[in-house]
Length: 319
Image (cartoon, rainbow, N blue to C red; front, side, top):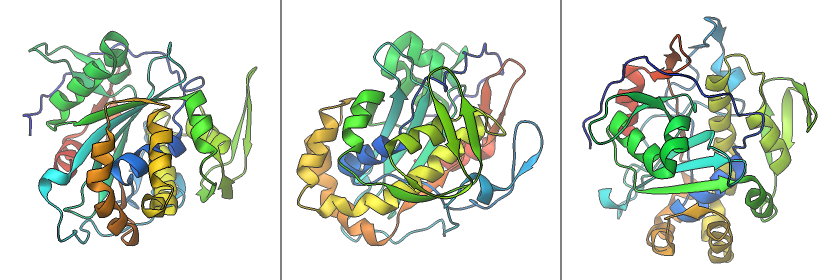
């Protein structure tokens, strides 16, 4: 693993793009499902009470909907090796002209029997490569240097290696979502928002979530706690999607689904990545391996999001 760099608090915050951005959790689960074998998300200290940036306590069970507390350790697959693991950074953006505003770090880890996923706020501060210690946000890294600089910045900051990347846009997601059915999800908030382009009206409680509802939930701009809460809810929704659709990895349509996804996104994930891990992913369907890690930390006075030491240690443990 790389030696992680620490960052000071300097940062000028990018505009909040989430009203026009997209983080289509369905598409993300498809990517992880068909290319890595599955995605992940919510475990460990999931029900720990969290403090939002306003200083008020937020019940994680309310914030995270259906996510349930599960043991940190999982049964490993007997034939799995450490080198079978694959870490991918998945980035979501509205279209080709947009800056990515969603960053999901996913690790397919059959040796540990889990697929951890970490959703990071776009304001998360990272250290640039090549000895430049001036911190910038993930959104700035993507704006300055595309997915390559975003990947390098996270590697430098977290002290991990990222093997692959994937960039997903809105319209391709709409096409991909039609291949898959909806899921049931327990929404923890009443959502009400309207502007000139769209209206979001969802009630707290059980929802049958299709692609459009997923977009509404994960791009809703008025969550208490802002981007940190949005990132946590994105992870929790992805947990439900993954655990619902993971069995498709062993279906007769797996090959065509994988190709359908890969042909609609920008990625360096290959069919060989998928084929080499397909059997292990299929074995993991009985484990409900979705595990969520949380980007614990806080915003500095200039809007940069600084990960805590505790969060950095957990990320290095899982990734």
